[in-house]
Each structure stands twice: as structure tokens, then as C-alpha cells.
Length: 332
Length: 290
Image (spheres, each protein chain N blue to C red):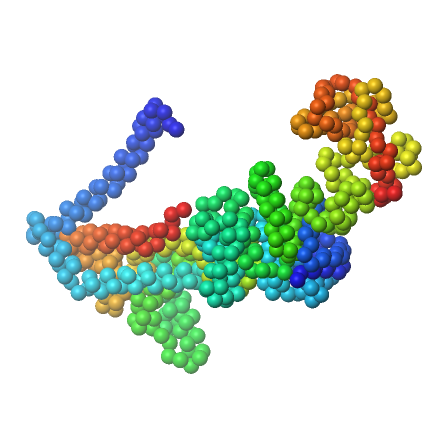
């Protein structure tokens, strides 16, 4: 079991208010990702749930039980840190066994659980090594192993993949998602990478300046962003925004069009522009187009199209996929 | 990396310093060795010439030598225990966020800046004197007979004074080690259900092992040669109760004016220091391997 409820949680460090007021309801077994730009309070929120920081006001409930003032160890949660936080003087086996040893389990049971975790995470041949003899990905797995042996109510991940190289990150992303399918335990995952959020999450919490901008499934966020911030943050490359008279035509303060929702033509269209940079990825080509009077647009087109600097193109937004926002930035 | 040319240049440039250092080391050593095999007593200047092993037999055979050796080990061991246990405790306290941390740290470190004879005098007259020392007054306040520290517990008193001087050093090194422990590791241990005692035992103490090793090694080197504190307070007495090897060399060579025997004692002291060093490196040196 592991449902987590936050009710009007507030956190201030002295004068500085990091999290003004957050209420969230995380279901048992869900994979929830906290995503947002750096300094938005997502890590603080995770640490509040973990119990590593005290809330200034509000309540945190675990399975309906108030744990606001409970010590971290009493909450039955496991955390994977950004730096992995492995104990350098202990072997991999001792690292994984440490929480069990602290729980005073009999040695036979500890061995059984450690072996099981090692098999699940393919760590068998590394058990007697020290953490410094492991690669980044292996360390990450040990940190996850240390978390799963405790059979926690929920896993908390604090940007666990940010120290890995790009290829390994994709691998570990799959492994963690796979692990979630296997264990079906609640997981909360903090990241600033919206691709990680989109690919892994059942539901995403988009945070900005300590406020929840939107809480929903990845596709919800993509298709129906609640406001301009979410629209700009979710989706890669970023959504293009247009203010002023062009937006007024659509009865909005500003409008947004995703790079993939343009019709591209060399002869006619709504907006005229010149190609500045063409980024060719093979499967796609991203064009950075300087439009006449509307600013720089990013346009996604298929990889076979070849454009070069200075080419004149016409952009036509797909009318059914124009996002409209009012003066306060809320979606209309 | 270096080319042949830069290596040759480096050697040439370093040579003067190396040569000076070598002379500085070898001349006194050879002179001491030479004197230790000579009949050379200022009391009896007529008796000269080669003495063979007589000086060594005289120094090592004397019962005071055994006592001085034991005293040296007790002195070093006692100070090490007090400074490392106390230093760890103080470091843990100083690592807590408190008001006035900066001033407090300077206060804790300050005994290290007091030179040994001064520190010993402060303790001798300010604290441990049975007539007008602070401790004497304290004892009297509770209606007790003041303790004459340097006569009743001479070696213990010296240990207390030396430990007071070295406690800041240990605290400082251990505090630095403590501060280099990553916050995430502490938090991970906390999440793993380790209480404060277990965090100390399984996370903090292993992390500090290397710093403790360094404190032990450095302090041992200096503590083997403790002299000023003994000279100023007990004068090695009563009898030989607070005489260590270094002070025994002083007593034989300078107080008894027997340069030959004193030199022999000095050579023995060097050998003992090396034995202790080898023993220590075996015992704790493995902590230094990264």
C-alpha cells in the first residue's frame, strides 16, 4: 500500500517561501513525476514527503495516516538520491543489506533478500565490490537495490539519472519503468527533464515557483495544457508563442503552436519566414525560422526535407491545434 | 610527462636544497653515533677514548630506562586516547549549527597556539598547585584535601597537560573530516532506518577513519619527544615517575653531564621511534590507501 496525500503543504526557509500551498493526491501504485525548471521546489517537495525536511504547515498523509511529524525511517519510504549516496566503505552487498541490518532482520533473511535484489537488478557479480569500483549505471542500480530490499510503501527518486550519460540514461529509464511494472509500488520521481517525465509517468505534476501548474497524464498535459507555462514546458522542441494582433484574430491574448503542428510550404501559407538553422536528426528536421514580424519559430518536419540557411518558407498552423491563452496565461 | 631536459634541470635546481638538508641530517646523526661510542663525561674529562658498547649497556641496563620506556608509551597512548575520543566528541558538537560558531571554533583551537612551556606553567600554577591552583580551591570548596597533582599523579598530570594542548589539533582535523561527509549519505542512512548511534558507527566513524589515522601518526611523532611540559612541571620526578625517553636523555646527557651515555640514549630513542613508526604504519597505515 502506498497512497500519499498532501494537504495545503507549505514550506519556507526563513523568509523565503519555497512552496506556498500544495495539495496533491497520489494513488497507490502510481508512477508520478514531479517536473519543473530548476529551483521550482520539486526536490523540496520530495524531501518533505521523505521527511528529510519539516513542513512549515499543512499535513502529509501516507495511506490515510498523518505522518507530517514522523521521522523519515518511520514512514516506510525509500529514496534514491541524485549522487546515489552509496556508503563508500561498504561492499555492494553491505550497502544493499544496510537498511535490513538496521531493521535487525535475521542474517539468513537478509542474505535471501539481498540475493533477490541482486538478481532483479543484475548485480550478482558485483556484490563484493566497493562502490568506487562500479560504473555510474551500476552504482545507480545498487542505490535502487538498497531501496527495493526494504519493500517500501513508495519509492522516491531525486533526479536519479542526471549523472549518467545520454545512452545510459535511456537504458535506466526503461529499467526503472520496467521495475515499476514488476513491483507495482508507488513511485515518485523528480526530474527537470520533460522527456523523462513524459516517457515514464502515469501522471505528471508540473511545478513552477512552488505551485502546481497542472497534474495529469502525459498526454493530457500535451493535448490540454492548463496554461501557457505547461504548454511551453511540455513537448520538445518547445511550443511557439505569438502575441499581439495575430493572437487577437483568434480571440486570445496569445496563441501557441507546437513545432509539429505546422504545414510547411515553399510557395504559400499564413506566415512567411526565412530559415536560420536547420537541425537534421535523420528522422526529423528541426527548422528555426525567422518569421516576418512574429519572431523565431521552431518547426518540425520530416527528415527527408532539406532546407538551408536563407531559404524562404511559408508556415500554416493546423487550425484545430492552436492553443489559446488569456492575458493571465490560462488556457481558453 | 617531463622531457629529459626538464628533468635534468629540475634535478640541478633541487640539488642545493637536497644537499643542505642531507648535511643537516647526517652531521648530527654521525656525531651522536660517534659520541655514543666514546668515553665522554664532563664530570670526568680525563677519561677519554673508545668505549665500545659500554654506554649502551649502561643506558639500557639501568632500571630507569625501562621505566622511561613504559612512561613514554603510557604518555603517548594516554594522550592519543584522550585527544581522539575527546576530539571526535568536540568535532561532532562543533559540526552542529549554533549561534557564535566562528568564535567558538577559534576558542576551541586556541590552546594549540600556546607554546608548551607556557601551557605547562599555566596548568602548574593556575590549576594544579595544591595551595593556590584553581583545582585546589575547588577541592577546598567541597571540603576536601587539595591534591598535590605533580607529586601524587605525576605522569597523569603531564598527560592531562599535553592532551589539553593537542586536543584542538585532533578536533580540527576530525571536524574537517566530518564536514566532508556528504549530506546525502547521512540522509540516506537516516532513510535506511539508522538512528543517531548507528549513523555514527556505520557511516560517520568509517568516514573519519583516515583522518583519525593521520591524527594518530602525526601526534605520535610529536608525543614521543615530549620534553618542555615535563621539564617545567615535574622535572621527571618524583624519582623517575614522569621521565620519558626524551627526558631521560636530557637527564643523562645534560644533568649528569655524561655526553657519551646521553648520545647512546639518543640513538636508542631514534631506534625506538622507528620501531613505533613501523608498528603504527602496519596497524593503521592501511586506512591511508585510497
